[in-house]
Length: 236
Length: 380
Image 1: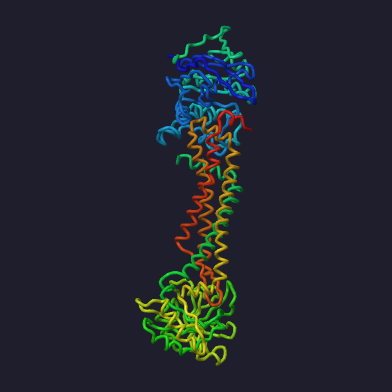
Image 2 (image 1 turned 180 degrees about the vertical axis):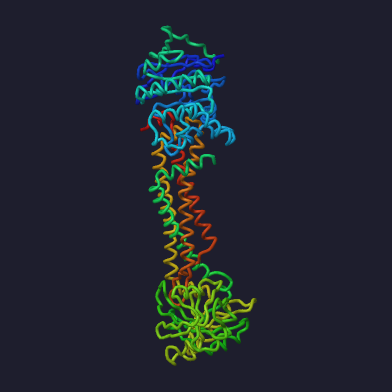
């Protein structure tokens, strides 16, 4: 069984009297250790799909199974617990908590897991070392550059050793040089730490760095020029 | 949840001006709340309790201000003969201000042995012997002494009355700490010889089995045909009647106490709502990381609770210190209401702050916990 199985997922929302459907019957599988880039035009639904897989949005219909858990059936509280244990989320705008230091921001996901203080300290130090920011541990977000903030965001996403790391336009607000640093860092996260990575980007160069490159066009997922086959609903 | 307490404190510190204003506003409101509570407790202490119900005060009929009540002192002997009466204490009262005042000085002239027998005075300085043997000696309540800066050996004059302080006392009955006791005869002579043989009131102490109402009727009946008619009431009723106007005012003022609670509620709720609106995206990030909605609710509630409780504790401690140090009182027609700070009032004040803190955080906390993550992340 694949690590992530998205089966026939539809997402609808109302915009006044109009019903918008960014995703309509989309299916996708991601294997353990994959590095997948998801590209597409603005409004194609790529971020929506990423948010559904990350469990911060709800599908209108269909099934999303991550590490054997159908997350579409979880309550809000259970889904939050599941995210704490299984998802590392990298935002485009970093979204660090401004009142917390780099160390405290990275430690945040670990506070939700059953773990001793010593174990937390060890993991935070390893994560900060992985993003080469040990010397900035006591700095607040306002005292760091955009690239450094994003590296703290990546450390926060990987610190709990999640099942899947999702990144929504992680280089969208960075200059070329910093973008390259971040992309290299993401490659290390995938290659050296063995973490499964799903990245949404509109940047073709950034997308080309992934092992699998998928385009989302009008709810059709295209990989290597071929449309991905729609999986059968497991519950059907 | 406790792991997130540093985050809560840091969030409050981030907007320290707003936090400080909210805490200080809450402190002032709770300070006023406790002042109102203290004066209400003082009034309640005067009009309730064993002493208030088992002691009678005989006053001249249809008179109110102590200066206008002139009872023959020998009425005491006639009253003492009544069955059920344990003792009668003649008292001369002089006050520098018959109207309601925050700094009225009330003298009570009593025979020294009766004073010692019927008042629970604990002399903190001075001695009884000096008081008993010196005509113009005075025992000064601790609160008056504190307010006026008086100590043993000091001479002072109020109106036509000049006395020498021969003792400063503390009484468990808070109102008594605002009185000055002199010898009866001294106070009768202090304003000219015309008052010799007359007293302002007679305090009648009853046996355990006596019915106060029956004896009060007997006293008034006995002197109906005498040179001066009397009105006899229990001490509690006498003080309630004397302070009727003031009691009405205090009764109205207690609504201000409720207004203070409302003020704290709206102040803390406004601050918490602002804090939540400022951090819509931040709360969404916390939920993305894995915080349950209920925990986000708890974080907001904790912030609100901290603001209110911190302000409440400051206000309550401030009011208790002020009330204890200044020994404030309000007097009218010779009867004094002491502002009575107490542990119960302090606990009540802090409890109000805690409850208000929780109430103020419920709506914003609910709003923060129910926000859709994706739309909140798009928030600027």
